[in-house]
Image (cartoon, rainbow, N blue to C red; front, side, top):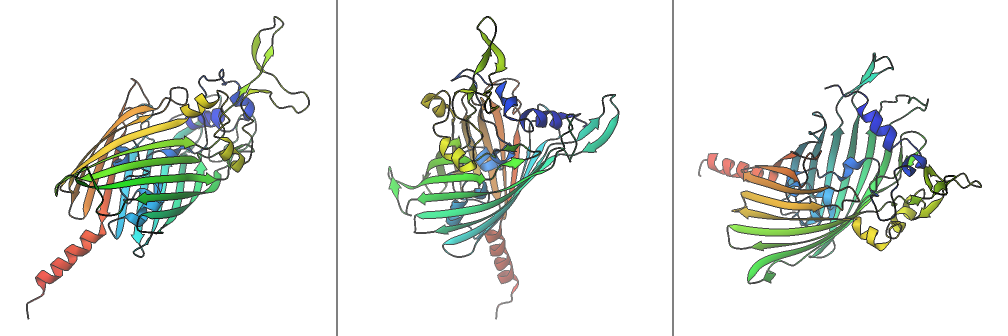
Length: 419
């Protein structure tokens, strides 16, 4: 499908403009004031297992997709090696050809350590560029991708740490020159994740059932700003804290419940002072400091600051004070039920305050394991009608290399003649 200037419009409105472009959208202190960043595709849940549980992932059981959520969990993986492929059609209520693809892999390199790698590719469909007369001037397929490598290490039987390195590339315009004469380029940057996981010892019992408790903490996408012109933008540096409990009810039934808290560690847009009209009322124009040429901040802090200052200042820079800071914390919760370690049912809920983006939705999911293959599906159900996330489906296919090796050994033993 041809989507004329779709990404270019979004690009011009949200990324290429200076701080003055954000000024016109500021609301009163405590009102609608979402935090925006570049490359938000890094926050999209890429897989169906966690995606079916309200997008929790800090303390869920380790699997091949742990690198996205909390790479330190890889050291606790029960299998020696895993490989997964995920696909998510995205925003299908708006356009039919946007999608997120995710390929992930991990390998235990010792009893205490594991390595992992992943590739995330976000396709934004097809763009047809036209001139003012409507004549086609070119075609372009905007896309973004990130390549990750990670290492996880157990420091004890119950505690592991992990670190991941990420290369990010965002090509939204193909180098097109904007109407104001400003040239564009692909944005590039690097980032890192610093994560840790605590998991209770084996044999722990709770309410007379074998149980596993987990706490996970992940600082993700800690990296430099990204630019498409001369303007530099924050990437979605994020703090994820989660906990979980998994119960082995009996030999066939397992139940787990999990919850995450998420907060972006980037500056909150401030409220800017308005110029006065001749009648003494506020106009729509922003007051400018004549000495510096910068807009005058009425409440909040200047968002144009270095990355580390932005991270540490993100806990107390909301113009609405502590109440607004609490609104910036997203909540995710979900559960997972397994029967005979072969069939899974999942459900969850994700909550974001209405003044910070208003993403509020339920998730349901199913999973099946057969031989060396696993298939997971998840479906998103928004709480409001005509939501752009409506009818979002996720699909994940996983491969169990341990089971594959076991089958080969059994097959070899069965074909070897007895002495």
